[in-house]
Image (tube, rainbow, N blue to C red; front, side):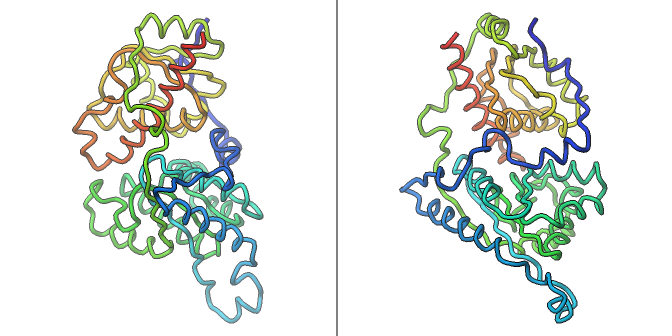
Length: 342
């Protein structure tokens, strides 16, 4: 019998949250050698070379680690970090996970939301203690969505950096612009600017690799095709889109990854455009977790490339929505290929 995501209500343990601080399956084999820069965009090759040099520097002893050094300075100098800025699909996550795989000691990797979830589960002090012995903390998808997260992550970065931990982050906006268009609290701009001083910025230009060899459009599937494929595919799930949206309200986004454990493909019927941020942002997180785990998506209803309304795409969260469309289109094309093979 075909299962459904709406029947899954995972409760991941603290050990699971900590154990998940590694690159997802999609990037488990990512290495600098397998990152192929686009020759039309020299910044990609420059970023690859810079990441390599940064990895080599991580092997050097930390500043401020010895007794004599600590006596010479009241505080250790803040560690420098890297900030990879660029559009969707230019390989930022590939470069970040490549760094993780070659970093000495105990590197840590997670998305922005995974770190905020970790702090929520452990408490701030325990989270800092856990991460302070990392050789490098890799933060993917660094985008500030609310005031609370802004304070939390800037404080976390500051304390880890003061402790000598190297930090590398990716995002789609420059550090000084993080948060613009999402909230207008001027008091927090000071926090954002102070945080940006901890990073050397690498701007990576290029085209979305997920669309280089495929058109942006994803052919629509008939509902009977989606249902038949779900029934024939071991480990598949089948859900009505509105039922899934309602279910996502009841499951914390930090549990979406556990919710799709062992799922081989996701099938949706009755897909329609999303016009509010509550549903839209939750679905963005689900798409990110599906993409991380390389789970194909097959859907009937509205065109997936028009899933988010123009109003959402013009909002302060537009970069998240556009990233989601890029990833969802890739997963849908993967789904199309599985249909051809059945």
